[in-house]
Amino acid sequence: MNRRSVLLAGVGAFAQTLHSEEAPLRVAIAGLVHGHASGFFTRFGKRADIQIVGVAEPAAEVRKKYIDKFKIDPSIVFDSAETMIARTKPEGVLCYSNTFDHLAIVKLCGAHKVPVMMEKPLAVSNEHAAAMAAVAKSTGIHVLVNYETTWYSSNRAAYEISRAGKIGDVRKFVIHDGHQGPKRINTPPEFFGWLIDPKVGGGGASFDFGCYGANLMTWFMDNQRPESVTAVTQRFQPQYYPNTDDEATIVVRYPKAVGIIQASWNWPFARKDMEVYGETGYVHTDALEGLRVRLPGGTEAASKAPPIPAPEHDSLAYFAAVVRGKLKPVGLSSLENNLVVTQILHAARASAASGKTVLIAR
Image (tube, rainbow, N blue to C red):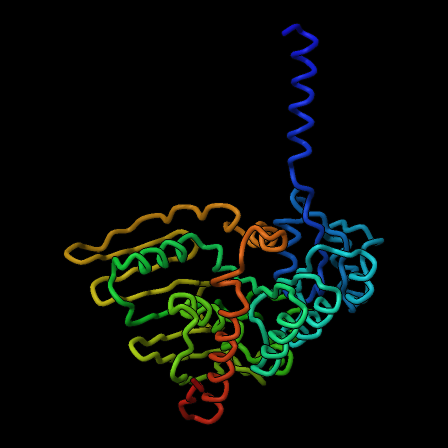
């Protein structure tokens, strides 16, 4: 082959490579009042695998804050999610609204046949969750929920250890989530305002952090609904949270297992960790990568969990894979899991209010 032929072959191979690369996922952002929106723009805003085609937020001062902070092109910023979706025609919508507004955004996405991923938790009530499930069924759109802990390699490793039978049948979960409280960590006003409003947030720490434990527990239990939920909530900082709980202990009972969720806005530091006890061993997780495991006949061993393989290693890659038909949404982000999560949170709120155990309909 002469030099010209080699050059042409190289150009052709390069062109084929470019052609085979996928175009960036065209996403639109619905709402900016969830504090995780800032984290999205910080982490994903300039990634090459997405194109942000629209941002919608009704509050003018919040829109301006994000335009200024993240240098967003004002021409793609709207005051209405309806207008934004109609004009930009995104492949997927990422929702950063308050929890109450999730239903309205899912209905809007259903009308436009656009998949949606929202920040946790799914809903403020069973009624809202059921309505979202109905939209997903009737329109065929994917409705996903994003939890930070879904992308923790420690949780994935603990799940795989359990599924492999290395600790025997699971008998108990103890899950801790939370931080010093939204006031003490200086949560932005647009986020703080609805977090402490039980109507639009669903509850205080019980919803804000109780959802993590309910999500993980439901995953380990193969989406099985529990038999009952018993909850005790308290308010240690009424000067900051006059209408919501800031401390919650939720006991979730299954036929052959029990889960204890400790959700708090009163921890001395931020934490997200889990203890899973089987008949013959245990596994404890510590934040993103930490693992402590004790198997039959051995002593406790600490290790670092291996990375989660792509595209399940982060929320954006996962969402893109689901939107483009490469992955079926199962597990932690799935609607099926999060309908059970909502049942647990809904029952916990009712139990705390009544002082009684709430039975879950089978």
